[in-house]
Length: 72
Image (tube, rainbow, N blue to C red):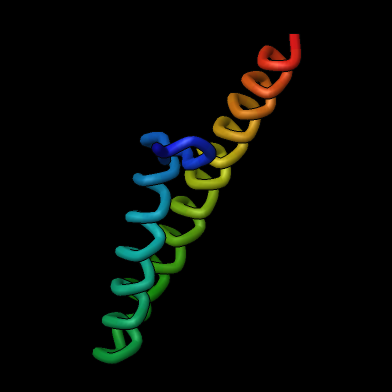
């Protein structure tokens, strides 16, 4: 039923959650004029993007390994 649909690993999920939370924090900091909160939000977004990228790469390696094994 779900052939070809991959699930997200924990790094992908946590990274994307951190990105969203960071964006919210950045906007909140901008709205209230809190530069520290805004900067923390930007840092959280970078952290989240890095973590999600690691998760994406991990899934890509896993998918490619599976394709290779399926060919054997």
